[in-house]
Image 1 (cartoon, rainbow, N blue to C red):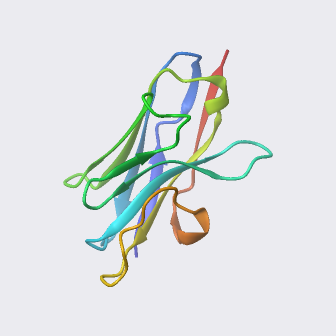
Image 2: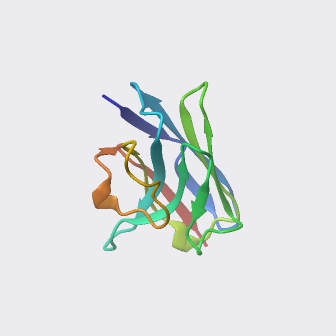
Amino acid sequence: QVQLVESGGGSVQSGGSLKLSCVVSGETYHRHYMAWFRQAPGKEREPVTAILSNGATYYAESVKGRFTISQDAVEKTLYLQMNTLRPEDTAVYYCAYKPIPEDYPLPRWPPRSVDFRTWGQGTQVTVSS
């Protein structure tokens, strides 16, 4: 069973940077989709960025050019480098994982939170102006 543990959240001023980590334990399927979602108070959970097992990456328009998703297969860790942070980036950030069966097409963007069964506990990111 795959488990996810996020870390790296914190409080920064506008324009600052943070790097989130999501450590993956358990055996992941070779075809998989991993994503970072975020949820601000009173708002729905929204996708921020995603990466497929083939290395393809996708980003929400609001974070393009500022955020970078990456993964380290050896360390089994998913990363989210967040630069030029804005107050509107304030949210709890979650990483999520889902396997993709062999006979299914590779998913694109945007991912739907309802399609993911494996989630981390979340890490708070607060950006002050």
